[in-house]
Length: 354
Ligand code: OGA
Ligand code: NI
Image (cartoon, rainbow, N blue to C red; front, side, top):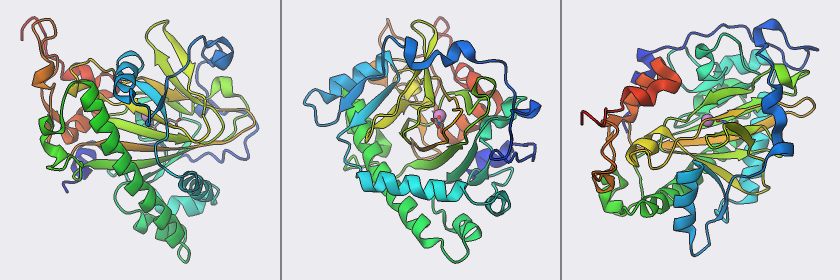
């Protein structure tokens, strides 16, 4: 499978190597102090609408998914077939990792030109302030890093993460077929789906995010606003809320409260492109909590790195002309590493010229 590492090598992320010991600080230091967030922290109290919840066993699942992708770009799924045991195992392995002493975690530190390993979130380089979180990224096998973290006791972590990757990959393929159907497309319209429509050849990463409790959540940012680059992300969040999505309608942040046993799916930039902007990649962020720590596990899923993704020809009409040029995930990640939240604009075609 083609690797994505060249995209990262081309644009290394240089981060300040100041690792804050979140557990011991009594106030938010200047390095981590963001402009006050109060108006956005309004949270559940003022939320008049909430993110759609879709039962994958519902006979009308296709139209529900299409509607959610069009109007929200994010939805919860229930009846997804991922066992509670696996979700709880992945969560406890994540907690096990982040509770290690900092010096131990740094043994598995991400290289500046790599993506896998422990460290600050990659998007940190776009902001002058640091975020109130730690991350661990898995691409392919976590074995090398797990060995650094637990020289004698890494098998359990690897087994759980490999099982999770296998199950998430299957679920992503299943969701992608439903998403294509909601756009009026078939698996045959997507060459890289493979003959059986199983999406065997894909690029994916597991992103574990850890948000420690914070003495002043109004001044800290867990994970700054961004969209995810690949096609879809499936997120498992622990019982503490923190994920927020930006609602164009109303111009406000809405909390995606954790629903026990459900997973959150969001539309990424490549799906935005493939759907010719019928579906919108949703802007989202994570805020932090005064008393509770929070863990989330994101599975980012995309096509093979060098396959070109472009607006599906079946979706183009005189009223909806083609809006984006073709781009591969590898190329798109390079554009994203340079232009971050403006990346989509860089591959947009001018419809008047087109
Ligand atoms: C991500 C992400 C949200 C969260 O990892 O890309 O958006 O709630 N995570 O941790
Ligand atoms: Ni994200």
